[in-house]
Each structure stands twice: as C-alpha cells, then as structure tokens.
Amino acid sequence: MTRTVIAGIIAFVLGAILLCAGGLAAVLGGGGGIGGSGCVVPLGDTPPTISPPPGGWQPTGRFDTEQVGHAATIAQVGAGKGVPIWGWAIATATALQESDLRNLAGGHLDSIGLFQQRPSQGWGTPEQLRDPVYAAGAFYDKLLTIPGWQAMPLTEAAQAVQHSAYPDAYAKHEPDALRLVSQVIGLVDDTGNPLLVCAGAGGPWTQPVIAAVVSGFRTAERPSHDGVDLGAARGTPIKAASTGTVIVVRCNITAGTSCDVDGGSHVRGCGWYVDIQHEQGILTRYCHMLTEPAVTVGQHVAVGDIIGLVGSSGHSSGPHLHYEVHTGASGASSTAIDPVSFMQQVGAPLASGG
Image 1 (tube, rainbow, N blue to C red):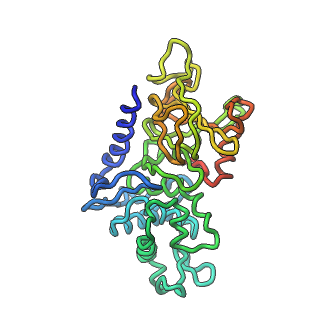
Image 2 (cartoon, one colour; image 1 turned 60 degrees about the horizontal axis):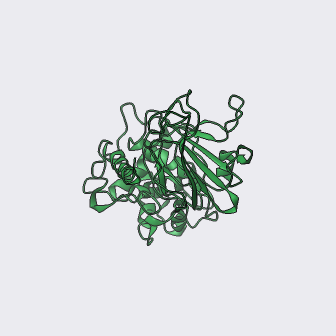
Image 3 (cartoon, rainbow, N blue to C red; image 1 turned 120 degrees about the horizontal axis):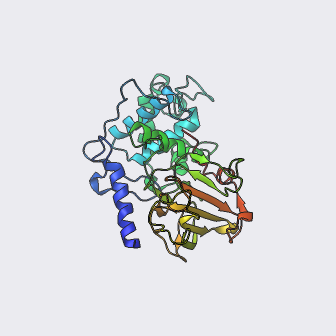
C-alpha cells in the first residue's frame, strides 16, 4: 500500500471518528480540521448535545460519577460557547490539576471551586465560583482572549489562564482529560479507550496513543517483552512521541507471511514498525501497524506527527500498539528501558487503565 493511500486513510479515519458519533456531525464545520498542538476543530452552527446516558454518568477509570459529571459540565459549557474540543481538554486538565474535578468549597488563600479561582483576583463572587457552569465559563472567557491558544501545548494554554506557581503541572493530566472528554461525548471504543485524536503534543514528548497499558514491560509472565502494549483500537493514529529522525521502516515477520494482514501467535516479528532516533541517544519503536507506515527512512518528524495506524500485524493477538524506548540507536533488547517510567519522567505519562 502506498503512502499516498495511507495518508488518505488517516484523513478518512480522523473524519470518520468525529462524524460517526451522535450529535457531532457538525464538528468539522467552519473549515476546521485537526492540526496545531491540539484538536483544532471549531464547532459548526449546531454544537453537539452532551447529555448523560440512561442512569446517569458512569464511572470511568479512577473517576467517579461526580468527577465525570463535572467533566461533562465543562464540555457542555465549552460547546455552548463554541470553543473547539481542544479547549475542552485544556479546561478539563486544568480542573484535574486544581481540584481533581471536585467542586471544592475552599482552597489556598481564597480559591474556590473546580478551577480554584479567586474572588480577589476578579474571577467572580464566592457564590458564582461555587457554580461549576459559571466557573467553566469564566475559564473559557479568559482562554479565548489568549492569542494562539489553539496552537499551544496544553500546559502552556492552561498556565496562560491560571498563572499557577507550578506552570508545568497541567501536562500530566492530558491523557486523563482526553479520556474524560471522549467519554462524555461518546467517542470511546468498546473497552473505554478514547477515540478522540489530538494530533499535536503537549511538550517535548507526547503519548503515541492515548490508551491503557494492557501488557507491561518485562513482566513475570513475559520477561522478554521489551516494551509495553497500549490497547488502542484498530485504525487509531499513532503519533511520534518526540521530535527525531526515522531510522527504520520495515515489515518484520516470519518468512512467507504478510504484514498487510493480521498476524497471530504463530507469526514472529514486529509486523510493520518504525524506529525513531531522538536527542540524547533515545530511540522509540512502534510495532504492529495496520499498513505500511506513513513515514520514510531519513524523514524528520516533529513531536505529535502521525506516523501510522494501530493494527495487528506480526506477532499479535489483536489490535494494539507495542511501544518501546531504548537508550541506544541499535534498538537491541539490552538497551530497552521501561516506557512507563520513562514517559512519566519526561512529562507525558501513559494512560492508566480504564
């Protein structure tokens, strides 16, 4: 399959993901599209309806019904103001950092509510700030005054609104924010993993996909497993975890089989895979892609660039991304390190189970 075709597939997948969800047919209106440092997808004339399912909002991952309900309120207010979906993720991540999505009666100094906004700083009266709808609206009103916020990494945009003493603290909440936004607008797969795609990155490193770790690094059951498996759905776009140069694009399988079909336990190898060399001697590997990768050897990629699609080629029992991090350019087993620990250290933690 040619790279021109895969580029078309990526464009189709991104469009289909957004258009297939109930109430989201207008999300791509106004000439918007995915780009910049987030989901730069302006709403059309009819914003999506965000309403609880029968029986109310359900827990997801570590978040209870109260927290999911507050995330839904934040998304509803954003939709009502015509804020692009990336703004909803920024607001949700901010509330996670400030209050863990709890409507707190108080906080540091005179801080109040989901966003810990302060009456003394002109955010509103104490009564107003205890209202999640008002608090979310006040956050968005400030966000929309910031030039270029849609092209900013999440933590920079949040900091531009909040002026926190801990300006980088918001980045670690990006995976959970995307999971929650996806949940309340119905963009999740059968296992609860988010299908919402934000094509950019929140810093020097970003998550290759937003999905739970379903098989860990060198566990007792799989001591030779040199990476982690991220349980993303088939066709999910895979992002370069950091800026670098593509050094390997290869079909790695048992002789006589094909990388263009699903593999299995009887097939050996990584299937379609990509290695990217980064600064400071770090190499990342992305295995089991659906089709021939969308990049070529020698190509420079930026953090967050889409390099391929999640599949199940090679030694694979089902769609997922096998992700490795190495401390040497060889990519040998002896240089592999735990991706969970590494990604935590660089400020782009892999998503927790859901």
